[in-house]
Length: 197
Image (cartoon, rainbow, N blue to C red):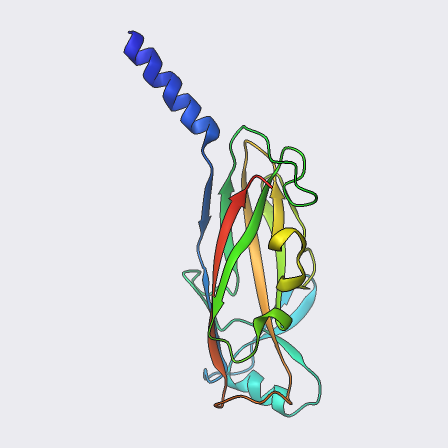
């Protein structure tokens, strides 16, 4: 009986302190050689082109920079965004300045690797929408990922909850960009973490 009670107590404590991060897509492909017609997706009330050859030619025919959604978000089916399910423990956060402030946990991009044709630090934009659960997006409008405060803190998630986030990325290109090969193609790989501050 004593062992059973101890096991139940340990199980309850492990559930109380457990946290998980599960994202359907961490690899984003921007393939400007992909065939097909112009494709657009409306995000936040504004339409954006999906990266493919048709949109690349449209860029080259103009004079202004354009932002493109990925051709494919690996693991997300036909979606052009990543969906992340986050589960936080009952314990409080670490008192971050913005992301992870108070008793919340900070969901952030902890690492970026890429083979993009341009330097992502000045060209990669991100937006986060809260699909469900108790969380607060710190990037409700397209924002340079390199400029997101608190070490790329995307959202604060309340303790003892499950939240689902949609994460959109755009790559900005200019018709005056010089690429080693045409059309330009590259992959972006992101690592996420849920931290106390």
